[in-house]
Amino acid sequence: MRLKTLARASAIAVIAGLAAPAFAQQTVTWWDFFAGGDGVRMKALIDQFNEEHDDIEIEATTLEWGVPFYTKIRTSAAVGQGPDLMTYHLSRMPLGLAEGVLTPITAEDLEAGGISEDDFFAGALDSAKGPDGTLYAVPFDIHSIVLYYNKSYLEGTRFLDDNGELTGISSLADFEEALATAKENGAESPVTYATGDDGGVFRVFYTLLSQQGGTLISDDGEVLPGDSMDKAVNAVEIMTKWHDEGWQPEQALYEASVALFTSGKSAFQMNGVWEVPTMNDLAANGELGFEWGAVEIPQLMDSQTTWADSHAWAIPVQGDEEMDPEKRAAVMEVIGWMEKHAIQWADAGHIPAYKPVAESEEFKVMEPNATYSTLADKATYDPRSEVAGVASPAYDAAQNIISPAIHGYLSPEDAVAQMKSELESRMN
Image 1 (cartoon, rainbow, N blue to C red):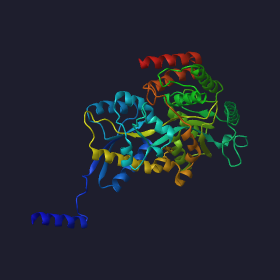
Image 2 (image 1 turned 90 degrees about the vertical axis):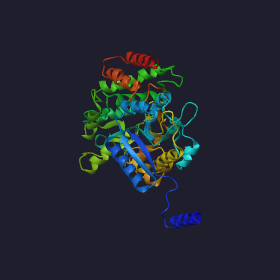
Image 3 (image 1 turned 30 degrees about the vertical axis):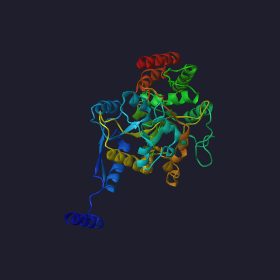
Image 4 (image 1 turned 135 degrees about the horizontal axis):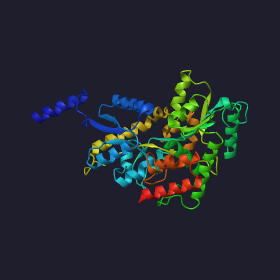
């Protein structure tokens, strides 16, 4: 009789909506490295997820970007004190694999999140895999450098079409003609980028190298193999010419390089898509004195490609323990939800790596993102090497060797030879 009473009570509770959930609420501990506008947008996504879910709660912590973040991941994962879910740059995938801090993500995991490999751009997906094809992360976006332009310096020239959009740049000669024209029209620095910082120098150098078909580090670990030395020298010579002609700023740090463009002193800016919100905000507040646009970096050399990276989701190892299956399912549900809401992240200038959002009508009218989203299929990611990627020896070499060269303190040949030697020494 007691069993029947309990059964009847349980049935009544279910009908009344009072039954306990099938699974206890899962708390997903989350670490990211997002600051500024990215941080604001990610916090809004997390808050929205938590509001919409009673069975899963994200408990988020933001850590310092770069080396501190990846060092913290390594040490915490080793002792099982890391997060359940973390953001990760795909350019640091080789480091994560070498350190053994990443767990494979299976087809069943993806299914639990309502997503599949076919949902993602091939370049980003390939960069999320190990050498054997095992998936270790889920791409969230594609972020690259793009070419911002100030229309006022190009009015009446062949570089603006009838709709006021950038046109006529399909070679290095075209671009340099546009720079010379902008200087004649009063631009203080016709093209600005962070000529004194690691990221700005590396991304422009790597784009010029990649457009020539050059390789910084091969898959088997050779630095500047074959004729890539000559192509790297050519890239440095181009950047040096831009300096010598007075077309780019002198040893500009990141903030200064951005200020040159936003203050109307530069006709072009080679910078990340993450500055799109800055431009939009300034324009909306009436603080921008010119019309602007942004496009994919034009084909300056032999092929159309641009440096790119991706923010991605990864699940770190838990020391010697395996993650509870219910917790892992909750983590994948978080990942899937974030991917399906990536249009809100695209507001930060990024291109969604999740194709259903990138191909949606909502994204197709998001400008200038939709205009430069063509780069998603043609982007070149950082070399698959432990010494490459953000906050890596390759970036250090750009700041400490390539930047002095483009300012005349080293010959391009000596700079490339030093870069090769430095990266080879860091591999040993």
